[in-house]
Amino acid sequence: MTSLGRAGARWSIAAVKAVLVEAPLVGAPQVGPAAIGAPSEGRSPELERSFDDLARLAGMLAGTSAWIRDASGECVGHAGPLEIPQVDLASGPPDEHALIADATADRRLANHPAVLGPPYIRSWARFPFFGKGGEVLGSLEVADTMARFFPDDRLDALAVVARQAGTMASLAAERDEAWREAIIGLPIAVFLLRLAAEPALAPGADAPSAPGGDAEPLTDEGRWCLVGANVAACRLSREPISRLLGKSLDYFPWARPHNVGERCMRVARTGVSEDLDLTLSVGNGSRPEHAVRIFRLPGGHLGVTVEDMTERRGLPRLKAEFMASVSHELRTPLSAIRGAVGLLEGGVVGRLPDSALRLIGIARDGTERLGRLVNDILDLERLRGGLMPMRHEPMSVSELVDLATNAVQSAARAAGVRLERVGDAEGDVRGDRERLAQALTNLLSNAVKFSPSGGVVQVGVTTSSTGGVRFAVTDEGRGLAEEEVHRLFLPFQSVDGSDPRTRGGAGLGLAISRFIVEGHGGMVGVDTTPGVGSTFWIELPRYVGG
Image (cartoon, rainbow, N blue to C red):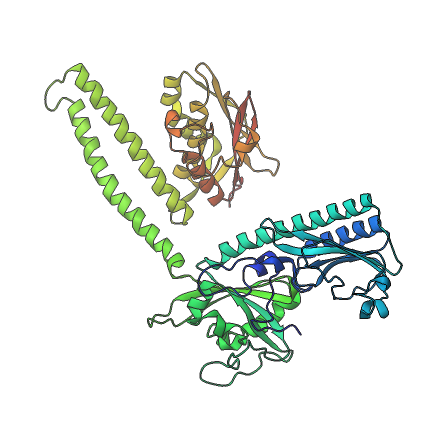
């Protein structure tokens, strides 16, 4: 069993593990030359296969066995029949190339156990590879049981393979360092666990017992022990990493009362993550809610995140309070301004000059536009939260089309766009008359805005492929690119990629339509051809009665 103490912890190529193991209480550790030297059960399978492939290529070039070692001497890639001893046959520095054609004739190696005994090595060569800072990350080595003299071109080719191994190791180290820096500073507590048959301790660490009593094994198979944690995990535990490493899972207050050990065994066995909510006592006496997630990592490890949910779960209340404030603080003065502007236009203070009337008209249009924006934002938030009151009643589809076309008729005339009714489907739908008319009106208004002067916007009703009712609005605009379609029905999106103010809207209409239609069990979408135009559609269940 791999030691779980500080001395036994190793950097792992697996990205998540790499950012957790031996994280200090403050600051991010540096990724050292042993970045590819994790035990085989912790390395990335993809990286292992890559090193095996490079060793296989080197073996083919050399016509013998080849292997790749990390800076600590552990084999991380191997190809060929020879069982590779974990010893260095060279007497020179590890950052120098070495070539031994016949070990029995070399006085330094003639009595080496790997030469005198299995695997009876006679020839051996080493090609170190380096990181960007010049540090030795490992080496490519080839060996044979016969004396061998490699030609220069073959040695050059093997050196190229070694450089490729160094590039791979450097990229893995850079990725691990990026993950490490990201995870160590996360506000979410992250714990890395490994199963041990017996409690494993860091040198000098206390026995892994819970405060206030002796620890009992969490399962019959063994204990889950801590082998890594980030800064937030240390803060949550109120202890430095040096005291946490090697502790049994039941040492932690968030684990003991909630069968986290059993959950860990389940996750390790099935690979399916598990979540639970719990309340923890913290230093100031409060008991905030926390969310715990347990998930499996490569190499037999588990990750556990513990997140304080107090602020996140308070967001809906804060949003509701904000929206109520917006409703009061904006709507009230807007109504007063709109009323005052109307009185001025009506001549209450006497006839005004034409220049003043033009300015008042601009003020009136601005207040009406701002009022619509405030209403749209409030509608959107109520629809998102399911707080919009809906009065469901049957209505004819022709009545719904009439309501929507009447609402945009004046805007269409002003834009020089003609509205045209097509389709002859009849029938009823059931829902909130005002809201469904709003959804269809938003589609028509959008089509009018993006149609050229003299263009035609068609609105019609047909039977959908599922037997429901399909309302379709077709414009003669520029159409939409494929990358624009996916964001059309999101809030505050401008479909033409320009400032939405140039089209007189905030990009909320289509999002509101989507929420209204989906709240009625329907669907909304668009069919578009760049340069030709678009057809926005709404599909609703047909109301049969009863």
